Length: 449
Image (tube, rainbow, N blue to C red; front, side, top):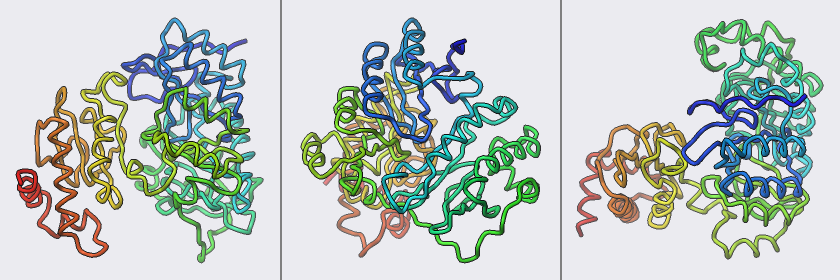
């Protein structure tokens, strides 16, 4: 019997295919792809569905999910049935919310990457078959299976993560963070990964008892003894060394794939369909990028002139974050993405060493942390501009137009270019010149000049 379609989630929750989220441009339908591999014909079929039942826009999420935008309530049943025929919708809506499993996108393409995709698919299936966890785990509770190699999931945060130890067939088990910041519990064999993940998830539920929203909070408050006591793990080696992420190993042409990113992860279905027809399969990544299996330098030459794709790690658009903005989110007050792209054109040096964030409201969903420069919308066509601050935080300029904000960032670029010391990053530069308030005076003088 087909699973029912539940009412759309309220804003702020995690959407799915069976439980979409209502946003300003319609329903947001998120597809979780077990193992992150999407055959080209399936991707092309999704594009057709997005055109018929949505507004023709799709997103790549930071959890390597694909999102169809602009779906109407009337179109949702037909879309759900079609997705089910493609094998992309199954199970109970409550089961769908816990299937947050991410694995290395280069598995099977990079010989140095451990074979984690089958483990991710097995864990996805096991979670879908564990009704005791469906309501007990928080909606954002996540699992990462990092196979290492050229494109490791080093910077991806997870509640429970498994990092392959090169050349051993073993995995380091850690909780509550990215590869560097997570707390290690020990080491397990590949055939124990799924059972270990489920056991730790259940241990979290019992130990947390609803008091801690994420596993990192439980560990910070109570340590790891309670968790470690539930799983038989070998101690973590003292000399462990795990590779970090370098985007030059992801984007562009590589042996076995071509990597391309989309600004802010958003794209029209026409461009996704074009990409889908040029590869046996797409690999979804948490870097707002896809890998095209078998792609080569000829595809780079084809896509480069369009300017729509990010094919090189030095592209300044990679250091921008922006929410979906006005028209796509009912909290959005400005065209955040369009305004962010204007900044990319005037601040390449700042973006080479720092992060710029544009938020269409004070929530800062696209980048909750501080950034080198943050624009926070405070009204229609008006921003507060802050240095070394998060969205909604301290601002040196208030209520400026997008054009004025762009001129301020351009002036900051000029001040940084002419006054920076050798190899000085912008954040250190701002601190050396007396902090945001002092630098704002210099920026104002440069704009006037």
